[in-house]
Amino acid sequence: MINKLIEKFDKNSCRKLITYLVSVNKSVGETLLDYCQKKDAATKTNNHILIIESKVRQHWKKASKIIEEFDMYGGGSEYDEEDACSELEAIVNLLEGNEV
Image 1: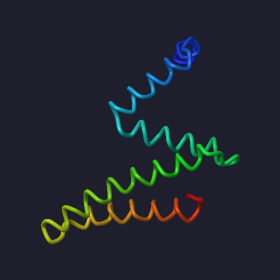
Image 2 (image 1 turned 90 degrees about the vertical axis):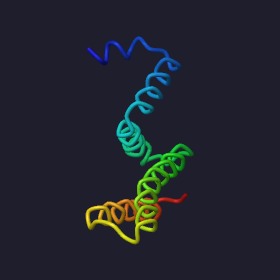
Image 3 (image 1 turned 120 degrees about the vertical axis):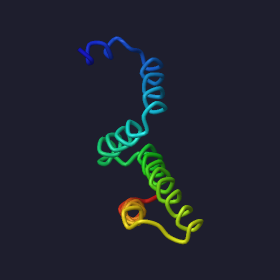
Image 4 (image 1 turned 135 degrees about the vertical axis):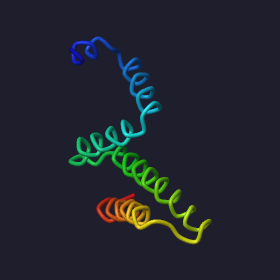
């Protein structure tokens, strides 16, 4: 059903739909970037660089929020520390595996 609906969309309508979905739900943006990264991994076009940069920014945004709270309060929970470390590790993996 969804495929039939989307088939009728022109490029501009698809862009508007994607933009709306990403603005409403952050995980949609992450899922979209993951999908684009997998699709573009073989060719590594200029889009690939944009995808990696966007993913790095997303991970940094999450990590920096936690780090700022730690700085403000002199530390935090182990759970938050693990989340920040996971985000930083994701950044390192993206940067090591790609030319940005």
